[in-house]
Amino acid sequence: MSDIDSIPDASEHSRPVWNDGQILQINEIFYSIAGEGARVGQPTIFVRLAKCNLRCFFCDTEFDSFTEMSLQEIIDEVRIHTGEWVSLTGGEPLGQNIAPLCEALRRLGYRLHIETSGSLPPQTELFDLIEHWTVSPKRKRVVEGFERITELKYVVGKAFREDQVEEDRSELIYLQPESSKPEYIHKALEILQRHPTWRLSCRIHKMLHLP
Ligand code: SF4
Image 1 (cartoon, rainbow, N blue to C red):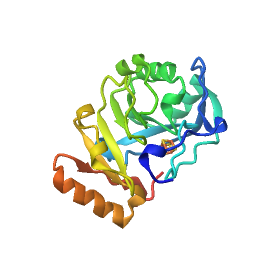
Image 2 (cartoon, rainbow, N blue to C red):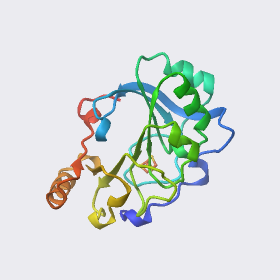
Image 3 (spheres, helix red, strand yellow):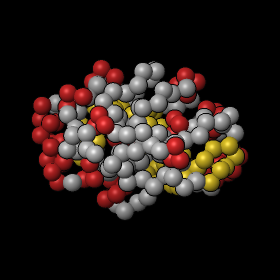
Image 4 (cartoon, rainbow, N blue to C red):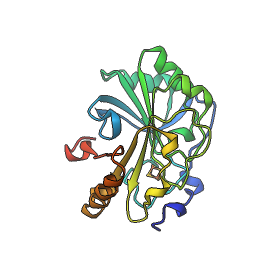
């Protein structure tokens, strides 16, 4: 399976569960730096939501295991760390009802970032809560419903085609070589010559062996 158009849905077991948002399935909460895209280098507390609606062949994130945590338990663990930014990632964070958590984190003064595949429509109330939207498309088109997309980040692998980049959806376009393989770094650099306003995204947390 290598065609961007044929990324399959996850099995029933791996799909996120929707509820009232008072209990969320959390894979892990940890402190690191943002390693990709426009926020690179910023100290960040990551909340990794469990489960994903897709099953990408190149996915290197273990997100199926989880702990069910109340909002207070999540907040208590976030507050163990010192930081300005909280990043909601996954898995697919838009697969769970994260609006109550985002409201609670904003009340505490955190700035919020989300990383999503853009394959599920966002809750509209999230646009007043989340400041930085990273959409990393895994299918041909990002679904409708995004009021704004801060940055679009494409994984450049064998099947990536530059004509699938939705330039009209964001001012910031990043190309990220799949698994930092030399052939995909070369492919990204070659494409960037034709699109000088696009940027290369490197996963610096991987280079620095950070989580
Ligand atoms: S959308 Fe992201 S988290 Fe989900 S399977 Fe694909 S790469 Fe992994």
